[in-house]
Length: 601
Image (cartoon, rainbow, N blue to C red; front, side, top):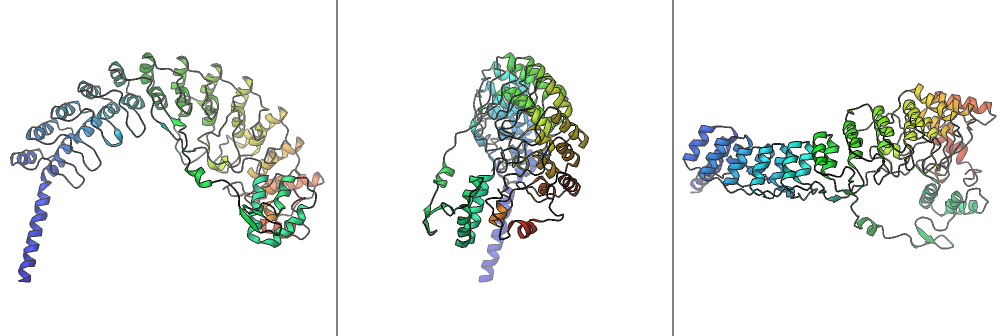
């Protein structure tokens, strides 16, 4: 009896599986473009809406292939015109995406909605506009498609989609049918795209906190030692405060060093605070400029679009064109009244962006080739009245975290950026138009410092050639820039030359009066003991590969280090031994019993 029942279940299961498979025969035949089979199955009254595993029906496949006859046959037989597959795609979605005007007409006649909501709030008109087929756009508009409907993901309209793809003829149709040329996409958060600048400013407060953290892990004896050290006079009160037992380890301490309670605000509340959107709100003209679609931009301008209307963050169409290296578009916009001096909220001007494009650093992101020579475009901007000394507020978006960790571009000019890459032709052009070579970044970094190597990242930073960098340094020295100027980090141009391994640049700086005995203000990347964490560094230390900046590896440059040692001897300075490591510095120099980390700083 059990055997008979089992056999019956197997047979029943097999029949059920066969029936389920057969239900998708019509969709399978349409997928394989077997028109005769499709006609036969329709005549046999197969399930017209039978779905494959992904939810696709025969009508989906007929529309996908643009087979108007098969589409009409399925619809005439009663196929449902607006079923969605598992991805949310309807036949009208597919037809609009392909710009199939005849198929769209057939679907609408069968009951499909010209304003149906697709995934992410998209509408068929947006997809048709993106396809660039005017007939498809007209069919949907004639059926009542809303020309100014916006999708829910980014708030874009059909006009923006057409502008982004450069479909000038579609733009003309949409505008004639009431599309808003000044519509804006939705406001969004930019996502804090400027990389962290943890190593770019005065490090002494960070060094102090790091020393405190190390001490807290080591326990009370180290605190007692540093209490005694803090009683001595120090030339640097900030560093001295690192060696007090009060208010360290993130808590208030009593007289015997017992923590009385944590300090600080509500970090969780800060993280969960709702941030005001600072990006988005792109106009159709910005989309066209970003894509370099000049004909599309012409249609929008002819219809009255504002050539200087900016996004929420301040991207004008001209800035968008410049950032994306669409220089012919930039030239076109300038000829139509674009203001070359409108910068975005980060202070990114057209002149600075073009300078950065010409000297863009390496990275994992692709960069398109410009459609005009960079220098020719920069000259065009200058002739149009670009502010040659415009200054940044934020580091530019294309800069990598490696550079940002020790060069904050806040306050930088195009001249400083050109100096960083040793771009002498551009430096000379900017000087010709009145650039001031003595404008530094807000944190006190000079053009000479970046030319020498401050901000240099091996394998990332762009440099035209060693010879051109040397020429740039000579030019900057001839302009009277002080080789001993210290930025807020305490670094000088010679620290940069040591880090980069620029031997000839180091010699030029010393010949111009540069000092090899100037220490920086410390580096939070050197950990292990409170003494080493608070240590300050000479240019020779950078050349010896002892100082790591941010997440960069410290690279020793023996040739530059040898040259610096010889020059130190000529100046009567003590020279450190060759072959040092951080461990040897700790054993021999820093961690000895008589080392006073307060006085050394």
